[in-house]
Image (cartoon, rainbow, N blue to C red):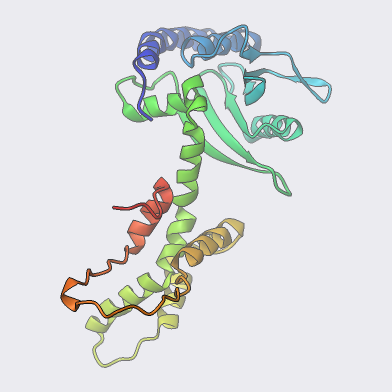
Amino acid sequence: MKISKKTEERILANVPKFQKILAVAKARDLNESDTVVIITDLLAEVFGYEKYVEITSEMAIRGTYCDLAVKINDKFQYLIECKAIGTELKDMHLRQVVNYGANKGVQWIVLTNGIDWQVYRIRFEQPIAWELVMRFDLLTGSVKDEKFIEALLLVTKEGVEKCVREDLFEKIQCVNRFVIGAIILSEPVVSAVKKELRKLAEGFRIEDSEIAALIRDGVLRRDLIEGEEAASALAKISKMLKPAAPVKKEASKPKDPRAAVPVVTPSLTEQLLASATGTEGSTP
């Protein structure tokens, strides 16, 4: 996402200020209520939300209240579970905010103590699942670090409005260890490995199935090829590599072969890149 001048100026002006505030708050070991006050100010001054319109602490969920919620145009964009600044964020804290999101149908949640920010996306399936999309340290991050700025943008109002978090999540779905594991076991890669092995063992017959078994059983970690995420990645790669059905064409007059234009088939990596960037089917 190209950062606007307004957003850049706001971040550059306020992040260093709040880093000083967070350092003092951590040294004083402020309680949760005081930490929530700081986080509320962060959401307004760094992340760009309207403090008294788009940030609320009055969201009731089954008899209790979520610490903070961000709402834009009558739609909740983030539920935020806040802990005291000196508290180490743990799985039990995450499960708490996941339950909030699941009960209210809010897909994006944040767990933070003001310093450690963790952004998750909930998958509404049975059972409920969630994935870490971004994590950053607001105290030690540098405004000169492009990756740190990109992490901040994920939570900003501008980032929400321009679907930065959805784009990043889509990238995670396309470029992750399960997808790479499926690619390594795919026919083009196995064929390429077989070609290289033949150079080392001339005269010996090597079957694709042998190579695939060696990769699966002796090279890849088992968790990359087993489970729901591995199966989903395999289905995605198999679908992408499946040859398209031939299209019947009407008979036409023979053309001058000298005028024929060679058809270039995209490589596997080019296909994956097109899938990740949403440019499949575009004209070069």
